[in-house]
Amino acid sequence: MFRDTITLYNFFHGVWHRHIIQGADARAVDASSKSATTGDARSSRLNILINCSSDKKVATSEGPRQYYPPKEYERLESPIESNAITFCEGKDFIVLGAVWSEDPVNDENYENGYYDHLYQTRDGVYMINSVAFFSLIPHFEIGAR
Image (cartoon, rainbow, N blue to C red; front, side, top):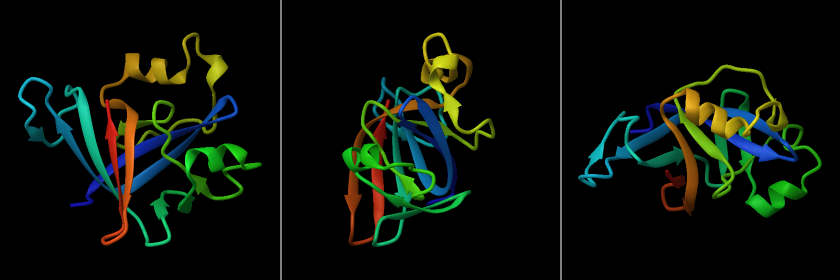
């Protein structure tokens, strides 16, 4: 458990900020059978568990990032300087594995946006559609499609 690596993209004022998170547990759910499998990038749904501290700090390749709810994240002056991370439903997305690329990425540099570009050119790209935090054993549960 918590052995997978994912790349989270947070959208902030027209740019995407990339966070590589090791210590996740990604489980693809096949749409036809609804049975859980591991590592199937062709599945339409993904359930992700992300390990964190009790104060909602998530370990990333850049160091620990403090979780902020989406509306608070949007009010930050600079999420990078604030060491911030968020999981915004319908806006942020996850890519299975580590994506080493430019950071930040300007969304307007892509005809239909950066998410669409990655979705069309890579496997294992999922839009976040649900988020829950559990404090007993601190972790986030992310649903994505």
